[in-house]
Structure formats: C-alpha cells, structure tokens
Image 1 (tube, rainbow, N blue to C red):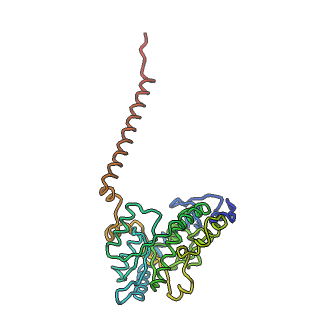
Image 2 (cartoon, one colour):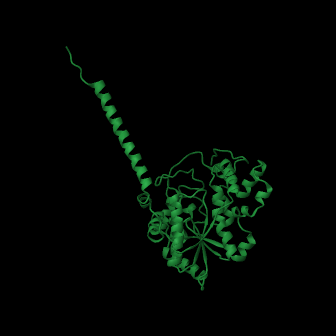
Image 3 (cartoon, rainbow, N blue to C red):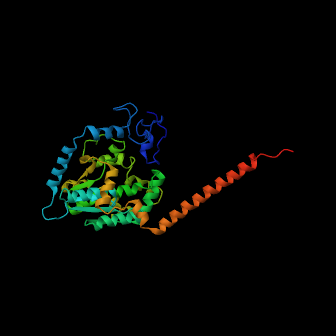
Length: 338
C-alpha cells in the first residue's frame, strides 16, 4: 500500500500515513477508500465493507437471538429498588433518545443519561436535549473547563486537523467516569460506526471495542495526553493546568477502578438492527425530538428570513432571465433593409 503523506512527530493524526495512493470508490454506495480503515473486495469485488455489513444485517445476523442477549443483559443488571442501573451517554438526539426510551419502556431499566456539553448549543439542539430530559429521565450535564477545552481544541485542529477531538475524548470517557462514580457497571452507547459506515472490523461481532483500541479507531491514533505533551513543548499549558481534576475527563478512569466496578460499554447496534432514519421517527414519536420542519414552523422569525431569502433568489433569477432575453433581442432582432 502506497503512502501519500509522511507523518512526522508534529502531526498526531496517524491515519494519514496509511491512506492508499490510488483512490477508489465503492460500486454500490460510492464511499472512497480514503475513509480510514475501510476495506474493499472482501465479499464482492468493488464493494466496501460498510455495504458488506449492510447485506449481513439483512441476510445473515439472527436479530431475534441478539434481542435475547439484550434481554439477558438487562435482566442481570436491572435494579429492584428503581435506582439507576444503566448509563446512557447522549445529546438528546435521535440515537440516544431511542436507546434511552427503549431501555426504560421496553426493557424496564432505570437509565441515568449523561451529557458532555458541546462547544455551543444550537437552539434546536438545546430544545431536543431538554425535551428528552423533560420526558422523565435523570440527566447529568458536564460543561468542561472552557479555557482548557479551547487550548486542547486549538492543538487538535493544528495537529489532527480536527478541533472536535477533545470533545470526543470527553464524550466517550465521561460515561466510564460516571460508571465508576455511581457504581453502575452497565453503559449503553448507540452505534458501532466503524462497522456501520466502514472501518475496523475486528469488533464486528463484539458488544464493544476494548478501551485499548480507542486511540486507533476513535482518536486518529492519538490521545489527550499526546496533545498535552505537544502543548507543553509549545508553552501552551502550564503543569498546574494539566494536573487539575478538569483534565481527568479527557482520559479514562484508572484501570483498577474500572475493574472494581466492572464497567462495560455496549453498542445498541449490536443487539438491534441499526437504521438511523428509523431512530429519527422513533425519537420524534416518543422523546419529543423536533423535526426540522416543525422547528421552522414554530420559529416564525426564522421562517420569515427563509421566505425572504427564497423570494430574493426568485426575483434575482427572473431578473437575470429578463436581462438575458433583452440581450438576445438586442443582438438577434432582424434589421430592416432599404
């Protein structure tokens, strides 16, 4: 496999060093082989691993058996006194909303939802978050130290090409910190994106990816600690900043604490056939998720602005059409001969 970029120690995105030089596209879904860890030609020549798995979901996986496994997991962890027995990380969007609602209402669990706050909430994002909470679910919302988060994000953009990565560290690890803090071993995430969209396949028939693999498959071969080391070299961080408890959220809990509690994550997509569009319909019906159309209709000012923009484009288009017609008449109108 040819390499198109030589990764140096200053560039922490280790995915860049293994991308194929020859660009190919899946014959079915047209995704390219520039998606890290995706594979081609394993089942059908010219087809990517995501399309292979889509076929397996429809034709090979016994979903009834997977549901029995899910029922067993819930039976083993369900509390008898109504106390929290499962942690569900989420934003209040379609996926976390569906997982939370199903665990509570179909499987009789008592979920604690936990949220790692984004950089900025959009109006509709905040409404969807509060709508899920107001449906009767406990939630812990953690806002990271803004100064530390900005510095980590700046470094991630510079060295990973992606300012989102520190959010990803906190989003993933927060669930395990809360698992240890509240002694709740069971954690439920939504989908295994590596399998659903093409990527690392060794966890295809597993309920979770072991934490030691996260750096490779979730964080571009890097970690928060590597960002901090780079930041120290550039005098961006002080040692006091990274010694604070705030930095702990960007790293996993101690291994002995995880083992003591028995913390383990599960992908709901392992147990149920994962269809994002169906999750959306489910969440709209059951968790108060706002569809974009309803959001527009309930925000008249935004609707007026959108209407005005459409009207302006309409007028501009017709003005250009009229202008083009006049030019055509000017150049091609027959002239009289004397």
